[in-house]
Image (cartoon, rainbow, N blue to C red; front, side, top):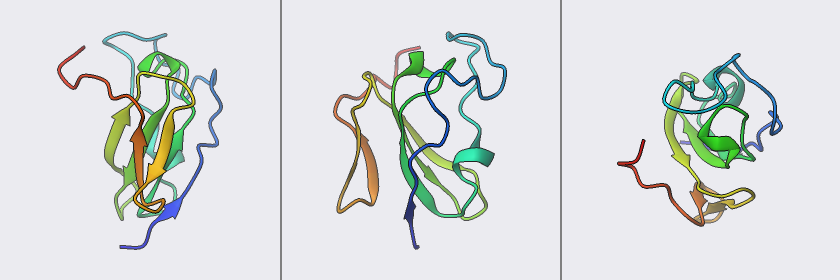
Length: 98
């Protein structure tokens, strides 16, 4: 699999899908925007209405869908690890939390 690093072109404060401000009904980021090129990965500086505006890392499938989303509990903390091939947060959100 070939990967390409993409920094999110969606700035913090951009309401990607007209989503609620946060909370249980918040819609995840739009895969069509972040996964426009197949087999990509990267970090986003956060999107209003998702994950309290905190960073998140993502990987994309060959058909332009999310393979994984990793929510960070902080801003400006998502980094690419493993020689730039895997997004990772310096702090991870508890997967069992709402």
